[in-house]
Structures are given as structure tokens and as C-alpha cells.
Amino acid sequence: MLTLALFSVLAVGLVQLVVVIAVVGLLVWLITTYIPMPPVFKTVIYIICAIVLILWLLRAFGAYDIQV
Image 1: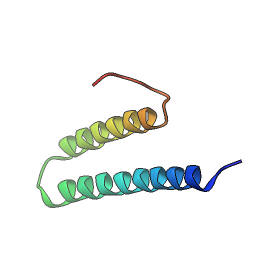
Image 2: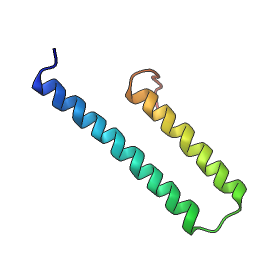
Image 3: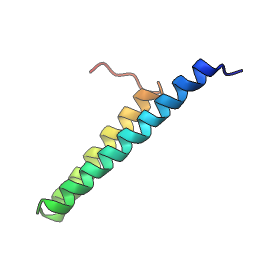
Image 4: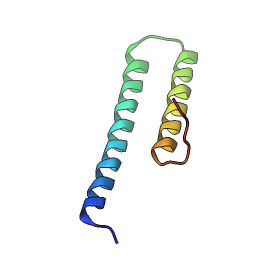
């Protein structure tokens, strides 16, 4: 059974995950919208951000542990 302290820790962790994903998405959108660049570079930025975000999420959930 979840205690109130454990529930609050989980809620803060989930809120932090959502905020980080939203900020990363906003930054990527701002960069690709307002900085003129060829479509190939935009695609590379999307792919790199997606890979980094997926690795960060896996590390946050404990499914992938890499020493950085």
C-alpha cells in the first residue's frame, strides 16, 4: 500500500518527467522553427533529441544504466 510520503515522491518524479519532456519539446520546436536550416539538419536534430530523450527516460525508470 502506498503511503502518503511515497505517493508524493512518485508524483514529484512524474511531474518532473513531464516538465522535462515539455521543455525539450519546446526548445526543439523553437530551434527548428526560428533558425533557418535545411530539412536534413532538422531531421538530424529530431533524431538526436529523440535518442537522448529515450535514453534519459530509460535511465530514469532504471531500465538502462550507463555511466556518464
